[in-house]
Amino acid sequence: DTGVSQDPRHKITKRGQNVTFRCDPISEHNRLYWYRQTLGQGPEFLTYFQNEAQLEKSRLLSDRFSAERPKGSFSTLEIQRTEQGDSAMYLCASSPGTSGQETQYFGPGTRLLVL
Amino acid sequence: TQLLEQSPQFLSIQEGENLTVYCNSSSVFSSLQWYRQEPGEGPVLLVTVVTGGEVKKLKRLTFQFGDARKDSSLHITAAQPGDTGLYLCAGYYTGRRALTFGSGTRLQVQP
Image (tube, rainbow over all chains, first blue to last red; front, side, top):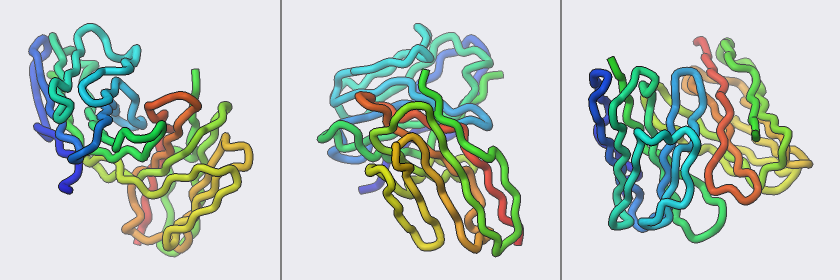
């Protein structure tokens, strides 16, 4: 068990460009979550998957954001036409998915800077 | 809107001092978790509390869940520089699958 991994760890992009982040959950974990954390704040929920199904999306997830988990394993989060306000740490977490509310294990995050 | 407030926001103390961090909500939690986060890293789970009135100890850290399950506290005894970091509480509200996080308490322990 190597824990949750995220790639890349850091991304610098220019406003208007598209970016894609990847998350690999803990093996056998069925539930995968995305959060966003801005400087000085706690993480805010974006979306979560149970296997390949995206079951909940936050109002923070504008139409420029899309997340997928096509085979129920890794997930990608894409941001189209990035804006400076998208600069944040994007965190992925996973949990077993066998009970209602579970301990979530977080990855190291992807820090995005939009210039 | 369910809000989870943490206090204090910042705390700078000397090595050996004790401290308490508070986490409060107007709504009932199904369960609550405390995390510690280092700069540039993801949150690392410290403890999960589920039952009202529950107290859990992790070495010098004591976690308490309020009787009504609307508040929690983290007490650190004899703080050490290695305790420096961002402490986050996060709760599950009834029926939710996503955690709601507080804004965190940034702790700095000076040697």
